[in-house]
Image (tube, rainbow, N blue to C red; front, side, top):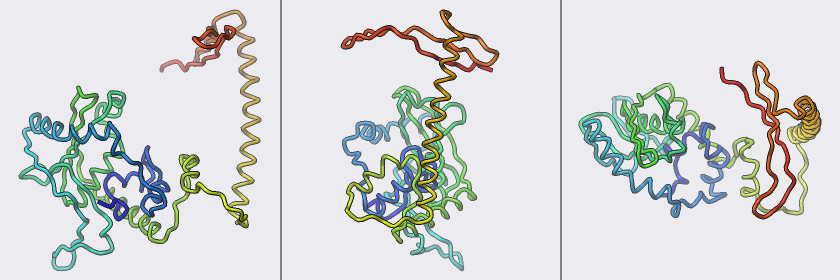
Amino acid sequence: MDRKSFIGGSDIAAVMGVSRWKTPLQLWAEKTGQIEPEDLSNNEAVEMGSELEETVARIFTKRTGKKVRRAPKNYTYQVKQNGGQIKIDAEFSFIRCQVDRLVEGTDELLECKTASAWKEKEWEGEEIPTEYILQVNWQLGITGRSIGHIAVLIGGQKFLYKEIQFDRGLFNDQINAAVNFWNMVKAGTPPVAEAADNSFMVELHPNAGAAMKEATADVIAAVSLLQQTKAQIIDLEKIKKEIEAKLKASIGDNLGIDTPEYVIKWIPVKGSTFTVTKKDSRMLRITKKKG
């Protein structure tokens, strides 16, 4: 399936600018064909996630009693027209999703996930990662279903499942964001670059030609702000070092200082390593007290 031709559930968080893994600009570059999406075919975590999908679905059925079946490969957003007829509106044909499982005899669906043990905190209590909430709500809106279940196997040992009720207001926001994003894809107009795009820029623009562009007012203002920011960083770094020096002088030959809010320690650090011999030193560490 050519993922450049549509916005799917795994894209919608990036479209809305809240993905931890991809910015709107990075997604736009993929959809416009300017860069190739990351090849995940040899990614072991992705492979294991795919292999364990059936296991997650089976455990969900065992724990809940809800029977599930495989869903059709691809759903396209359908719009109700006058007279109650349903058709695929060409304007929204790029709005699609894939669903892992449907819950038999209901208007519910199931999304299966796996996560490493390091991600367990993201699922504590009622928590669900934002990207997955948006994905499931996207699936519910497109399929016309009201309840989504998300089941996750964490670290291969802990199984959780949680329920997501369809949020019409959120879905409307998702549709509006998707339409605006897709208009930029069709027009070839990139989204505004974010801080996370800094290193990505060389991937998007790997070559430097000989021509010089004439600066726009926005560029002139940006350059001025950048230079001011650099100067402020230098000043702040100097202030930081001065404060650290004062704290070290105050600690002297002691281990540290205890304040009402912080514990400041100037701890010993051994300098020898397996390959390099350095002098022993001390490292300043400041910890905020709990509560």
